[in-house]
Image (tube, rainbow, N blue to C red; front, side):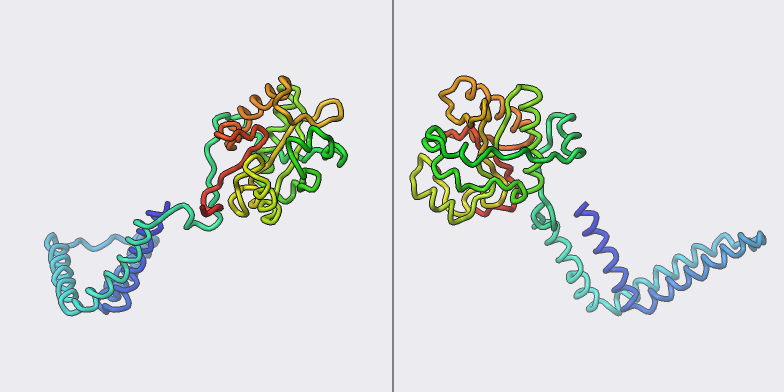
Length: 278
């Protein structure tokens, strides 16, 4: 599409320069327009056209070709300036083009499952109710996710595309596998990111703006069972859930933290090109 637009711009610019700089060009266009108008009028009135001499078209073409060559010789300097001025920007745009140059462009990987893709294009899923604040202050939660009680669980602060993919993952986990999911943390401010980074690599290695959380494109999730958050992978039921969650998330085009060297089983993110500059 970008190539077509560049070629269209090139042809249009050349035509405008030709009409503006060459009186002969304007005469040819006007002659063609008036000739077309006359032919249309004759067809409407159904009048027979006069027979043409066999050699007349050849004389006309030869005369036009001679006139064009004379125009090119007379305006060689203008053409030498105008043609590069039109061609160079078009060629540079074609050579240096990237998807990020297009406004609003947010590429995402193709979804392998047609049903999942249809769901994402259709129904707008609604976020579930958050667990009560006390659920984030238990000893088990504090050991695995320190300072989680102050984390943001505002779905509205996350990117709409990531928001819907994550909600769809929650829906599939509950309806297909019987796991009820809970959002632990979505958007994370730069200040909070730096504070967590100061707690060491066991918490996070990313500083401010080095995490997709700052762009609303990452979330940490766990499971909700019997009125409690289940985070620790030491629980076989939870470990099985994390594996299923990773499979579902990857089917939805998300990156799962369970594939990393320092695994983060409850973490998913949507990596949009051009968002994070590393």
